[in-house]
Image (tube, rainbow, N blue to C red):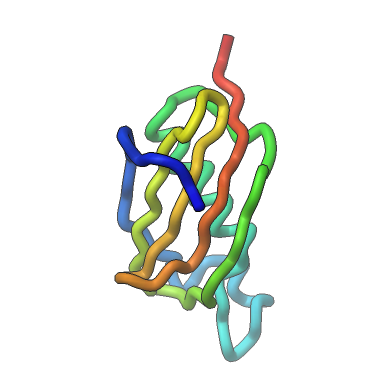
Length: 106
């Protein structure tokens, strides 16, 4: 689905059990919301390409539920200028994937 990964940027991360968004998503059975995964992608993008920002979501798919404290690897790569593909893996399991469009500072 997603193009070559010649230059990638990856980090391992997890969502702490006390993250504020988990209280309402869902009480007694917390699930990490997809928007928080996208926020993690944006934070990683800032580390990889400082000053850049997400301009739009070209494609996003959430394949599996993610629970608090579960370790995932978020990987970014640039299949073409202005687009960054991402993949979030929990071990071999794909949690989320997609492509974002980015803007770089002038």
